[in-house]
Amino acid sequence: MHKNGPVALIFHILVLTFVLAPLVIICLVAFTPENTLSLPTAGLSLRWFEAVFAHPDFVASFWNSIWLATLSATLAVVFAVPAGLAISRYTFPGRDFLNALFLSPLIIPHLVLGVAFLRLFALIGATGSFAWLVATHIIIVTPYVLRLVLAALSGLDRSAEQAARTLGAGEWTTFRRVTAPMILPGITGGWLLAFINSFDELTMSIFVTSPATVTLPVRMYMYATESIDPMMAAVSALMIAITAVAMLVLDRAFGLDRILVGQR
Amino acid sequence: MAFLSLERVSKEFGTFTAVCDVDLAIEKGEFVSLLGPSGCGKTTTLQMIAGLVEPTKGRISLDGRDITHEKPNRRGLGVVFQSYALFPHMTVAQNVAFGLEMRRIPQAERTERVREALALVQLSAFADRYPRQLSGGQRQRVAIARALVIAPPVLLLDEPLSNLDAKLREEMQFELRRIQRKVGTTTIMVTHDQAEALSISDRVVVMESGRMTQVDAPYRLYEQPSNAFISSFVGKTNLLAGTWRRGGASSGAEIGGVLLETPAPEIADGTPVTLSIRPEKILLCDAGAGRLDGRVASRFFLGSQWLFTVETPLGIMTVSIPNHGEEPPAEGSPVGLDWSPANLRVIADNAAAA
Ligand SMILES: Nc1ncnc2c1ncn2[C@@H]1O[C@H](COP(=O)(O)OP(=O)(O)OP(=O)(O)O)[C@@H](O)[C@H]1O
Ligand SMILES: [Mg+2]
Image (cartoon, rainbow over all chains, first blue to last red):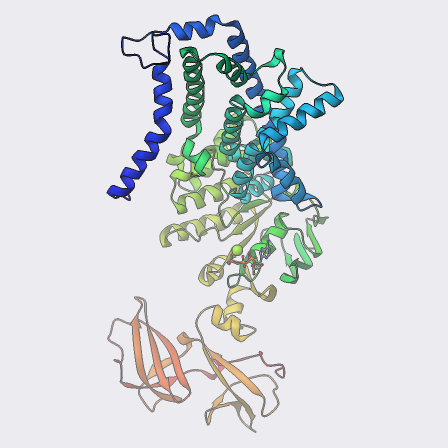
């Protein structure tokens, strides 16, 4: 094992503090019994969590966001896996274009995307429905899945697939029994990144949500522009908890190292 | 019509020709080795038979059926890959069972056959492990079991024993040979170990840069190599370049002013030729008593034999003599070399040779 020198150690501690401190403080503030944003010095209280769950708009937005993230991440997987297979295994006209097209939402600012979709939906009269919101989220999260699927496919030993073929498996069976399980870490990692990105997307969603489909981040934004109270901290703590749980589940199932760093 | 035949099969990767005009007819139950240096096209040839690489030209047929463009899963051949190609997400037993599952063999029979196959490769205790928990040689044996268990009509083995220790390798060679005898499986094995090719096969195919240069029984390949490359690739040899001289009573090659008598085909006087003599065909005797005198440059003890390098007027010669249990001539001592002229082979390397 390689040991860090004192300078590197201090650097790491500073970075970690910088990244984690706001999260820790938000989570602590969520348990305050006071009416203002403050650290819980006089005991812990769950009153602000109760406030969140008593607030029907927040509860609706929460479920809305969960559904949105689940659906768009899952559909992104459905698109990205065949696309990844085609891009990594075949040469066909327009292959590079397709690759660039699928990845372009990573580069285009979400603000621009939001305005563009708003305009498009106004033109075709499509505003307001949950389905269109899902469509926009699929577009912005697909690149994450595609990247991870492509990485998994490029590291894949294709002779295992060949072995399956010689043992009598057809192309679909080979995909189902050999290829898919072998790239599963990439797929689940991609799904998770897609889920998280969709779950806390704000910039574009502000433009494309309708009053009936307000997502949790948009709801928080709307609420925060009017007043700031510890209920915001409680919602934030809940979001952090959901993300952390997703990460933990994934780490138990597949190992985060394998998914995010690509180690076996 | 042979059981498995390749007719003028070629494979080009872009402008590079990996395999060129291979013609090969293999009988049912035959054990054939593909022998050749790294990169000569052995794996490519095997993969064309397996259906994993599409030939650019030519025709492959199995049991009278043209399989040139048939999908690999319809050929039903057993393949052991050079890289093993195990399924990393399945246990050893699941790996081995995969082919049986594809054939819809009932569960009970499947379990039994997997058990037998694992016993055969001495891995019964490892059935529930994952490939990453096995050593290289153990993985290789899983790959062998996985190919054998489906009882294929043809086994294609790509260096299946390369990672095993000497003892295990011998046992596996014996097993492969036994199965092939018992079941009559036609077997093609790629190897670059010439000893393995010679000891196990009915016939050996030598490949050089994409072409087959000799197809022969092991014994004939060793004794009558068709060119200088084969004679030095298959076993050790001494190669001597000279000029052919035809006399009245005796003809032979003149090398460095010495005439080496050789019974040889009709060759025109003055033709440049290459002679080959195997180290074990040369005898050591007292200086002056043999056909050539020299001095021992070095000697190596190999257990069952001694290997000498001897400085002679014709250059360095390698000589091997059996270990009779006595100390042979020391380094630096003068010795004589003798051989029977029949063991001095003229290699038909040169265009002018008959
Ligand atoms: N997909 C490919 N594209 C381009 N060239 C290839 C490809 N596959 C093989 N080759 C080339 O074809 C030649 C033969 O390769 P092959 O794998 O058949 O060699 P081999 O005889 O099995 O060698 P080794 O003993 O090292 O396994 C090599 O020069 C290799 O570089
Ligand atoms: Mg090879």
